[in-house]
Image (cartoon, rainbow, N blue to C red; front, side):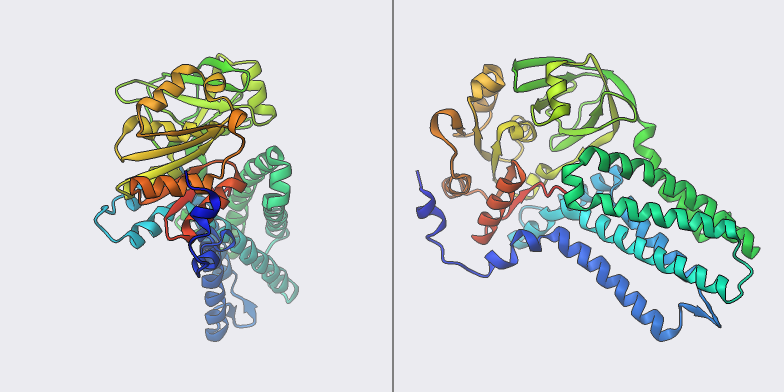
Length: 437
């Protein structure tokens, strides 16, 4: 077996160690792209006077920019749009140059558009609110106190949503972040309807059929869509150990490999998304839920008989395997869950590197046998007996031995970013979750 020194240090440092660094990942590049595009619109508007209408600030122009950015932020997170993006990206044939497929595989970084759109939407709305106050102070009688009141509430909630979505708060208080994001977001949407209707009433214009009306219709439909499919379903729980629960579902939905579903104990409670594990020619699917916090611990210790499922089956990182002729999967612990359906499906030839504690004791004999039977020469590393491996070295060895074109990593944040960076620094396309939600 190659050691870390033999495998990773035998290639001299190159420009890819800088350009492929996690701080420069596509998520952040897309966010910067949205910011730059908005700054360009702001600059051209200042040049041609778009933001001013005589002595008053052009509120309609600023309002449209705020709505356009907020639409981008919301629609790019819509499950059907996410599935469409993955579908389009994976239409590229494997005969195309690797660099094109490498880039297309980064489709799951679309969250950068969400972040950039939300940030700039709040910025434009701040400018819009400031302009409303300015116009009101210099004598614009068209704006009522009610309109200003709705607008001030929207601005306060937007800043609350953004502040609690910042990584330090989100990582430490994720449940609070999720609740604020959901309920404050719904409140903002309702207030937007009230504010837009109030503005058009103040100005004597017709609200129905206006840009704001149709934009809000689209946003409302997008936000409501996942909740329109909300359902309470039966679940059968198997516990191969106190660390893992295998949840089985059969309610008429057999998802595709590389997808996830979100489940909760209550309809408007805390939702957790897990990778689906469908099996060929079998109805339903499984979820592998490992002990990783209060929610998962309670799920394992007190298995429910029913859970709520929200939204539709949604594409995830591993679906991009279709872009390559052969892939290496690298997983740790319950990361085997998102990987297993691809091993069972066998559509794309693969190799597996799986590092976990006592695999047969923790996950059960049946699951490990299933893995061994459905992939070529799997490396199953027992950390209880062999210690923690150098996953980058093992991944590189698997790539060199198998001739794989890409590496897909399902692990914790630190290891995922390390392996992805190590592989891409060597010119090997690599993919893993980016923790942007």
